[in-house]
Image (cartoon, rainbow, N blue to C red):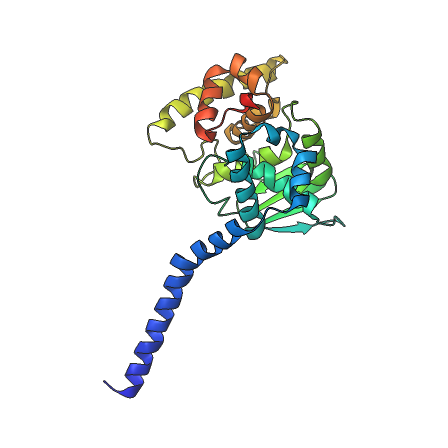
Length: 275
């Protein structure tokens, strides 16, 4: 073997070792480093001020939530839009609610998510819509939040604050948009996230389709419903709205939508009635 061939082989081996280290070992080392960091006192204050119900969660779960928040904030980038400045109050308030959805799932927080864009208030989204003739027009829609499949979540900060000021009204834009992120992890945002077992999809589809159709009937007939009737738009929005209701109005949902509550309890591996 020539000297040049040996050098080339050594270079390839070095690259291979570097790739293995980056893929296999570095994530574990990095996670261990994050786990070892103390959860800042100012972050604890934000949790107490913004999400006081967390104090009712068992201590073990509080510590698990703090770890998830640390990993989330280490991995995701926040951007202020339209003059909004980003501080730890915003970052921790959003991260805590997003991580609440995955508290008992033993997983990395939202691996496909890269960034969170925060506007000071309602923002305008531009959409191209085709009519029945195929003609495309541009619509401008006022939005409180939005979840993108390209690794982004967009939030209006005033609505985030409104959501945490009243944790029993069934409306929470962070829970809603991050439910969409979980939904999309299945490869399609269709109201069916990745479930624990293959057999779980059959009961999920049965319960969710019945509840979705019932909410659609309520919306058409103008009847009162526990869940926001925006959930009648499509199955993806139904899952997001059902998630909001599950976390914010668990006792009512368990009483009036028992099977739906059970499906969500099995998926999230939590029972918010205990809080």
